[in-house]
Image 1 (cartoon, helix red, strand yellow):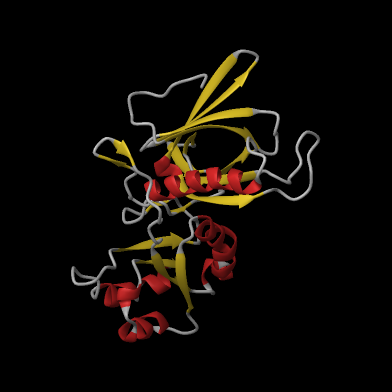
Image 2: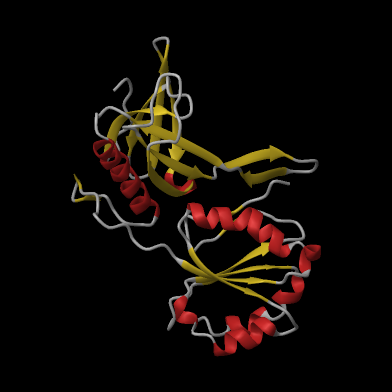
Length: 266
């Protein structure tokens, strides 16, 4: 490797290639909190730190479709990281914070067999997903990557289609569903069609099925919130309620789940 990370325990260390610029070599080092990406060009190495707290998910895939100028897809495999680093922008009156989506794809082609290359990227995927979901990969100082990734959390999503105005479901499809897919988050959706629809639903629902609730709404649906939130106590696994304001979407860091972030393009 052309670079070394600080004193944290190294969980994985490997040379990949970036994608789609497959001529660029990337040296990756994974620790418990950071993914270090080292790119060496013309005898100069630049290192970028991707904090695991900013990563919502990681997927592994077999060879890309089609061919590039220097790479066929026959034997390659790759993994993609979905990250939402927090950026600071200078507003009119104060600084503003916003998470911006960033996808990073790394290609593995050192082996002649696609299966062997896929084993490498699947191990990275498994390690990253375990870490962002709270499963340790270092036990008593020794690296031990679990064979099974912990299940993702499951959410109930309440949507008032008339709020926004009238853009709640569109916002959900365009901004929330892609994020849920990237993080492999399970969810159920209730689209309300009348006043007190959510309240009536929650009175009969088995809330132990969900780890949290996300409300896509203006303030109308939120007025129904206190009644059913009173049922969230220490006897249930449902920890909190996240709110996605669709009049103007603002960044929310949900304290009960580290791999789900709602973000804004505005």
